[in-house]
Image 1 (tube, helix red, strand yellow):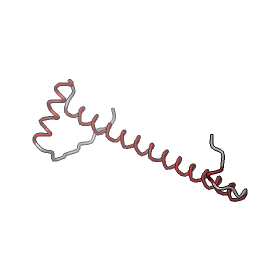
Image 2: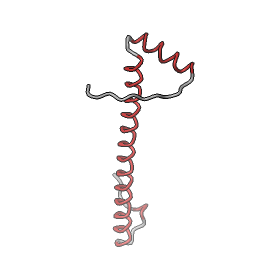
Image 3: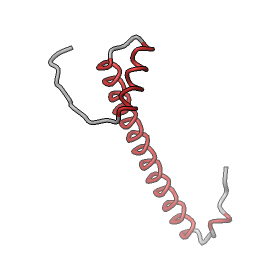
Image 4: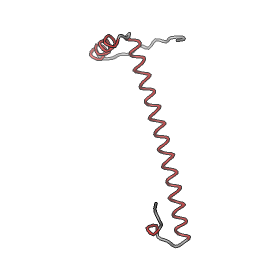
Length: 86
């Protein structure tokens, strides 16, 4: 597992109680439970960021295609509504 570091945080007594109960029910130590929760949050944030980057990329590609269609349309003097769609 490698070197370990210590993190001290202040949380509400109710949150600590809930964490302890959850750890006990799942058969995990409090340290393991909290570490897993933090890791899951980091992984989710990374997935969300990756999805956001893909969406931005797709939006840029769509914009590029729209510009190309508009350019073709204007060269042929066709209104966009008259272009064939599939």
